[in-house]
Amino acid sequence: MTGGSEMTDDRCLHELGQLSDVLAELRCRSLFLVADPIAYVVSGAAGQLAPILSRYRVTSFQDFDPNPKLAQLVAAVELFREQPRDVVLAVGGGTAIDLAKLIAWTGPQDASPRELVLGRRQPVQPAITSIAVPTTAGTGSEATQFAVLYVDGNKHSIDSPDLLPKYCVLDASLTAALPARITAHTGLDALCQGIESLWSVRATERSIGYAAEAITLAWRSLADAVNRPDGPTRAAMLRASHCAGRAINLTRTTAPHAISYAFTSDYGIPHGHAVALTIGPMLVHNAGVTAGDNQDPRGVEQVHGRIARILDLLGCEDASAGCARIGDLLDEIGCERRPSRLGVVGREAIAKIAGKVNAQRLGNNPRRLTHEQMVTMLESFG
Image 1 (cartoon, rainbow, N blue to C red):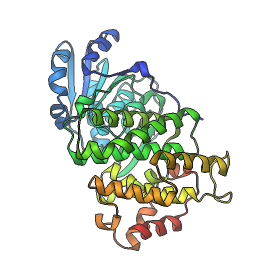
Image 2 (cartoon, one colour):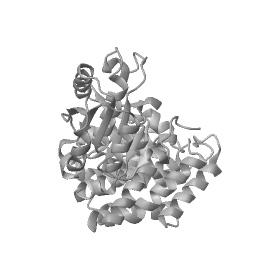
Image 3 (cartoon, one colour):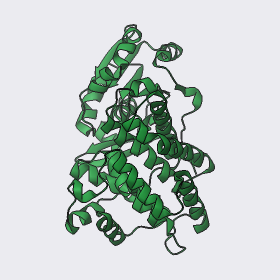
Image 4 (cartoon, helix red, strand yellow):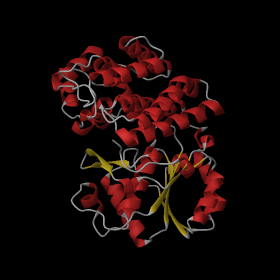
C-alpha cells in the first residue's frame, strides 16, 4: 500500500542558495511567492532570497491565517490567474506550504477553488511546479501530497499526487530563530506523525523506515531543541519532520490526528500540541488490540510487532510506561498534558470533541475506537 507520489532525496536541497541552480534548471522566468510574513523575515530567508528573486518577475502573497481558509485561497488564486507565474515558491511553516500547494494545483484550472477542493470538479490542467522552503520543523508538508484548508468552518484535507512539491529546501539555519513554543508544537507534530505512521494499518517496510527515523530523531532532540537549541538539534528536528512527512505521505495519519482537529478548531490548541494530547493514551489503547477490534488486515500480531517497535524506539518496556514518558516530555517542553486545563471541561464538551473526529483518519488506526471509548479515554486523562 502506498500513498502515491513520493519525494526523493535528489529533490531535497540543503542550502537555500541552491535554489538558484534549480530555478535555472526549470527555466523559470517568474515566481509566485507564498510567504509567512513574519517567518520570511525572521528566519533570514528574505535576505538570502533577495539577490536570487531579483532576477525574476515575482508576485507575492502573504495575507493568510495560521489555519488557512477558503477565502484566502480564492484571493490568492485570483491574483495568480491575473498574473500567471512559472513556479510557486512557499517559504514558511505548514500553512504557507499547504496554501502554495493548493495555489499551484487550482491556479491553472478554469473551475473555482471551492469546486476543486470539495471534489465537485476535477482538475484538467497540470499543476504548476511548486518548491517548498520550510522554516519550521514539524509539519513535513514539503514531503506530502495533501494540504489542509478550512471551508465554511470545517477542516478539509485535500489529497492528490499533484500537490507534492517538486523540490524542497531543508536548510536548518532557517529554523534557528524559532521561538521555543513553536519549536515545541511543531516538533510534537513530527513525533506524533512518526508514531502514527508506524502503527497505521497502511504501514509498509518503506514507511516504517521513515517513521522510525523520525521518532528516533524527535525523541532524542525535541527537548533540547526547545530548551537548549543549537545547530545540531535544529538540524535533527528538521530531518525528523521531513522523515515524518515522507512516512505519512505513504500511510496517512490515524486516531490522534482524527481527534485533534476539534481541539484546534474549537479551542485554539495548536495542531501539534492538540495531536500530542492523545498520542500517549492511544498508544495504550492500540497496544491492547485483539482479534475482535483489530482493523489491520494483516492481523493482530503485525500490530503488536509494530507497537513493540515504537516502544523500543521510545526506550519503554510497555505502553503504560510509554504513555507516562510522553506526558513527561510534554511537561519538559512546557506543553499542558490535560485537555481540561486547556478549556475542554465537562462530559458534554468531551462528547462534542468525540463527535467531530475525522472518520477517514480513524479508519487508519490499527484498533477500532468507538465513540464511547473515545469519551471515556478523554475523561480519564482530562
